[in-house]
Image (cartoon, rainbow over all chains, first blue to last red; front, side, top):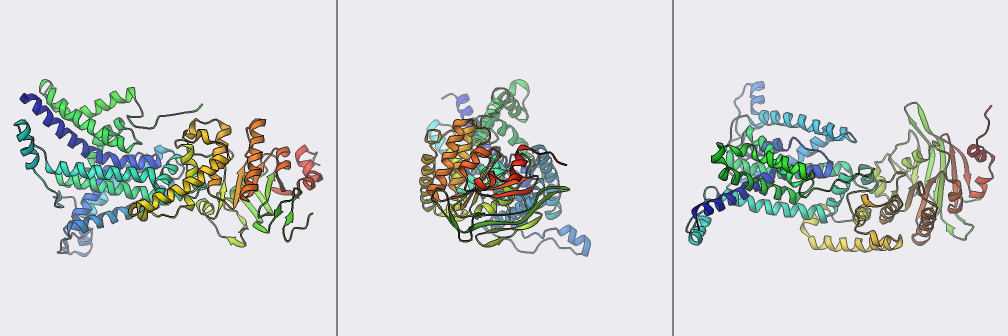
Length: 328
Length: 272
C-alpha cells in the first residue's frame, strides 16, 4: 500500500480515538438536556472539578488548605497519606452525588417552571462559581493525574500493523482505554434510559413536568439522579482528559469541543453524541492532514465548528435528534 | 337526601361502599382571591361522583386540591379513614389517586405504549441498584407490567396506535391515552378533569361508555368534573354543585336537578 494511504489510515484511527474523547464530554450535556431541557454550560467545569477532587483525594490534599491556613496561620497542605486510585474514584463519585444534591437544593428547586434560558443562565453562574470553588478547595496549581491507566504508544497495535502493512501505526494506549470505557458507558446509559424504571421516569420528566407529577414521579429525585449521572460522566471525562493533559483550568474548555459534537449528533441522543464525536474527530484530523499544509495549518481549532454549522443548515435537530414537531 | 351512613344501592343496582375520601371544610385562597370557600363533601367507594358548576366555579381547583397540586389554605382531606398531611402531587399519586388534565398532559415525545407504561411507575418495585444488578428480574417485572398495560390498551380500543408518538395523535385519542395512563396505575380513585371537553358527540359517547365500563369492570371510584350538565347527570351517582367557590348543591342527579339554587346558578337569576 502506498505510504500516503497508510498514513491517512493512521490519522483516521487517531481521529476516531480523539472523537471518543470529545464524545465523553458531549455525553454529559446530552444527559442533562434530555432530562430537563437545560443546556448545562457547567458540564466542562464539572469535569474539571471532578478531576481536581480526584487528584486531591488521591494525594491526600487538605481541602480548603489556603483558607484554613489564612485563618489559623497554619501550614497545612497534605494529610500525609495517599489513597488508592479505585477508592479515590469511588469517593470522588460520591462527592459528585453530593454536588448534585446541593445543586438541586440551592439552584434547580427554585427555578421550577422557568424558561430554559433562565436555567441556562443559572448554569453559567454555576460554572463560574464551581470554577472558583474548585480553586479554593484544591488550589489553582497544575496537577498531574495518574490513576494507573496505561500511557504512551501501544506496542501491540504498532507490532500488529507493522506485520500486516509493513508500517506500524502510532496509537496512544490511553486512547484505547478511553474507547473501551466510552463503549461501556454508552451501553450502560442507553440500557438505563430505554429499559429501566428510572430511565422511563427520566424521559417523562423531560417531556412534561405536570404529567410526570401526576403519575407519581418526584421531580427532585429525578433531577438529583440525572445530575449525579452527569457528574459521574464528567468524572470519567475528567479522568481521561486529565490523564492526557494534566488537571488545570483549561480542562474546563473541553466543553467547547463538545459543542460541535452536540450540534452534529443532536442534543437528545446518547448514540448521537458518540457518532458526532467520531465524525468530528476523524473530520478534523483528516482535514488537517489533507488541507492543513495548503492553507497554513491550525485547522483543528475551527474545522469542527464549520462542520457543525453546515449541519445546522441541513439538519437542525442533528443526526439523531428528535424530529422537531410543532402543532399549530 | 338519601341516607348513606352504611353505603347505598344506586338506581341501576350497584352497591356503593363506605366513605373513601372526605373533604372537610376546604378553603383555598390565592392571595386575596378565594377559589374555594368552606366546602365539605365525601366520595364513596365504588361510586361515580361528579363536581359540576359554571365556568370559574372552582371545580378544577377542587380537583387540584384532591390530587395534591394545590394545598388548601384551610380544611382537611381524609383518605381511607386517615387525615392526609400536606403532600406533593407525586406522593398523592403513590397513594393510588390518578388523574387526567383538562388540557391533556401527556409525554408527547413518547409512544402511546410508553406513556401508559409510565402510569405503572408507582407499582414497579425494582430499585435502581437491583435493576442494575439483577437485569433478569427487572425485565421479568417489566413483562408483567406490559401485560397489564396491554389489557388496558384492549379495553380502551387503542391497539392500532400502540407505537405512535402521542404528539401525532388527534385530540380525542389523546384524551383516551391519558385515561389509559391513569388507569394503568390501578388507582383507588380516578380523577377526571373535564373528560368530555372539546369532543364531538360521538367521542363523548365513547368516553361516557369507557367511564362507566371502568367503574363497572375494575370497581374504580371516579370523581369527575364537567360543566356540561347533560352528560354528568346520566353518568354520575351523586353530584356536588359549585358556584363562585361555594357548594350550592349535593345529592343524586335528580335531587340536584330540582334544586332551585342550582337552577338559578345555571340559568342566571337577577340579584338584588
